[in-house]
Amino acid sequence: MDENDILNPKSTGAFGIIISEAVAAVLILLSVLTVKYFFKGTYSELKKWYNTNICAETEISEVIETSGGGVDEV
Image 1 (cartoon, rainbow, N blue to C red):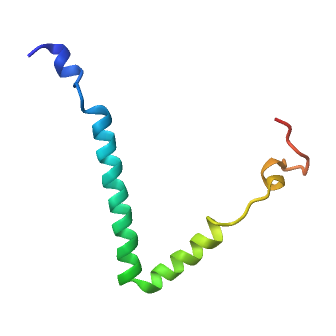
Image 2: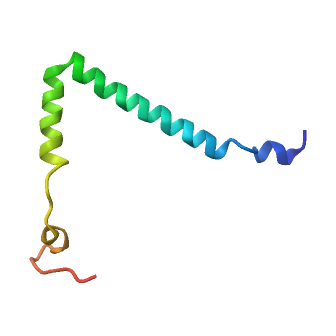
Image 3: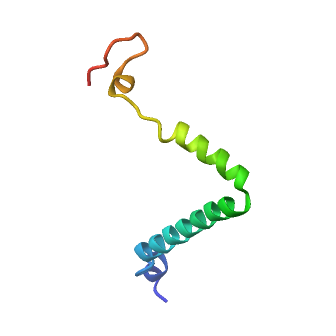
């Protein structure tokens, strides 16, 4: 076997990434469904936390203000 063939696999790059992403997505989906149907109390707490912290609306003034109260020019 040639040394270049060992160092440079031919077609595992993009295909491996796609398979890894698909496996991760399925694991996340199964985790959420398991918590939803078997741990209803935990699911309701997580849903409340998600709605409070992740789905909170942000105004642009909150993002561009500096700690001194002025607007940070970009």
